[in-house]
Length: 92
Image (cartoon, rainbow, N blue to C red; front, side, top):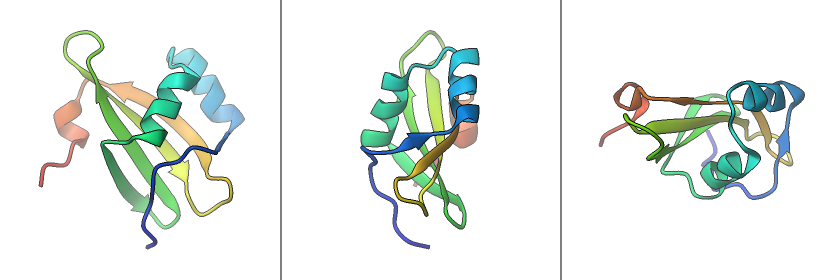
């Protein structure tokens, strides 16, 4: 698998846009995660999940952005936030 890097130019699918509206996640929050992710993990060939923690409410939230990185520009396929930080956060 190829290494993944911060993303500044990308396309957001209609599905991802709908989920952002439904989940009340702004495009600026997505851009923040993609440009400076705390963690990036390949979930399968060509797809990565970018994630960052934000102190929004209690408990803190983790934003997860799923990106097809095997395309130019990369494509955001879905995004969500979760309070289950420990479920998704890798500790090395």
